Image (cartoon, rainbow, N blue to C red; front, side, top):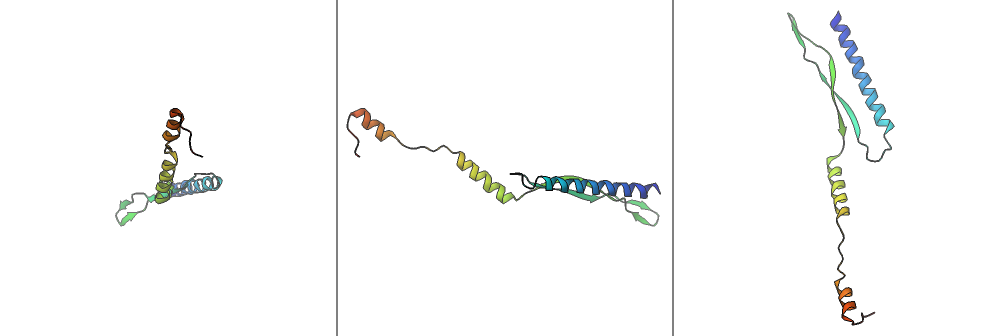
Length: 105
């Protein structure tokens, strides 16, 4: 009977992790740059008995960040382009000032 109780306790633990992750997502919904997270569960390895396999419940294996890779790439490109230095050529106005010839206009 101990196996049944540990499966139940594991299920409650998994549910608590899921609720905590959902609460974290709700609390940060309006935070700029925040990516939603989700808890991923997988089944535990079943044990073999004389009549077949007996399940051992499930466990949370990891918590992953959910985001759109395409939008992430677009954002990185936009930030990269915004950070590029803007070069303007001002050599003509400087050289005319040195030569003593007045600039038109």
